[in-house]
Length: 80
Image (cartoon, rainbow, N blue to C red; front, side, top):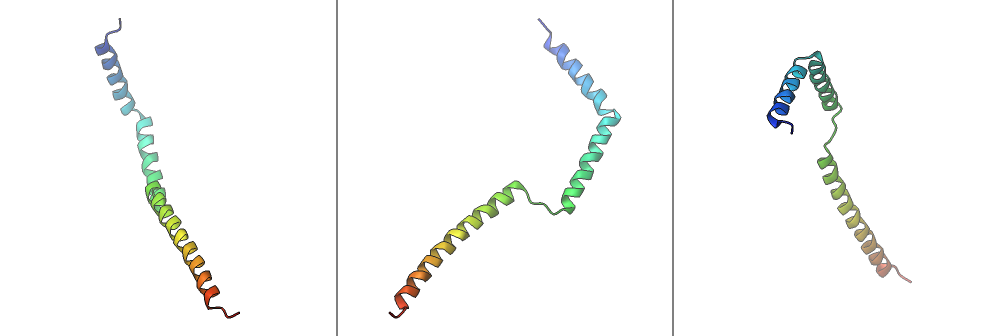
């Protein structure tokens, strides 16, 4: 049976070594650069997009109802 403490110790040491490698610095720099680029692009979050999609759907429903009501009123006012 493998000793879990030994596995945790080895895992911790590997994480320490990886944190001190240039790869960790590269990853941090890439994340910062990408974050900066996305900020400049003025992107919206998925949550904001979903909210605006729901607002648009409700607006379309209201517009359709108003168009139908207007058509009824125009028909009622139209002389034969």
